[in-house]
Image 1 (cartoon, helix red, strand yellow):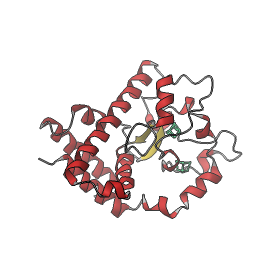
Image 2: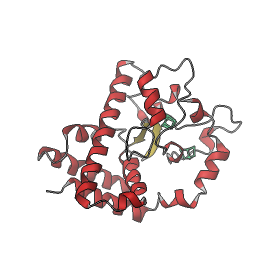
Image 3: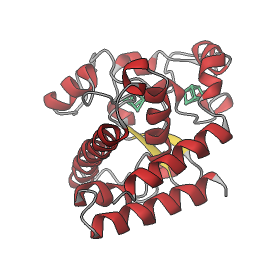
Image 4: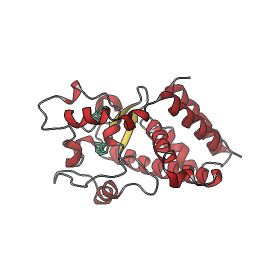
Length: 220
Ligand code: SF4
Ligand code: SF4
């Protein structure tokens, strides 16, 4: 089964579990949207699995925490989605064309020549909330960018995913923080060569976590 099939299967299971009231409705609602970062959520779990404090938790507690993570991620995703819709940015019509990744603005090299939308540069729990003065991002969200979405979240609150390709999308690309703008070709090369980062793209490990997630979501 390829990654996309895993995502579809995950979404179906989560919805079924939601009907049985095993997963809060808000979690399944986010999952159904094109753009919800399912793949990054799974990678979030891979990062947690490598942390000793997480590994020591009993399975029942892990499930509770994973469902809570999904709920929090989904709630915030839906708020951003609704905000973009309200501001009529036109970005929701075609996610792939409307959004970018981080992408430097000062680099002589165009971001299109090196970015493969792996999302690695946005897999940070939080960043420096140094938004340009003209950014219309609400103050509360700027704080969330600075502090992160909460316990156990391991990627940017504004990172979305292009469902057909699995590539990364920045939901607030035109208004993103300054640190996002200075991540350029050199930083990108450095990250892509990092052996620890490469482990996150290992298809075998990814599928293992997807399966675990499906089992947890479907647990009675
Ligand atoms: S705000 Fe956008 S560019 Fe910056 S880390 Fe988040 S998703 Fe990436
Ligand atoms: S790490 Fe590089 S390839 Fe990956 S999304 Fe960022 S700029 Fe693009």
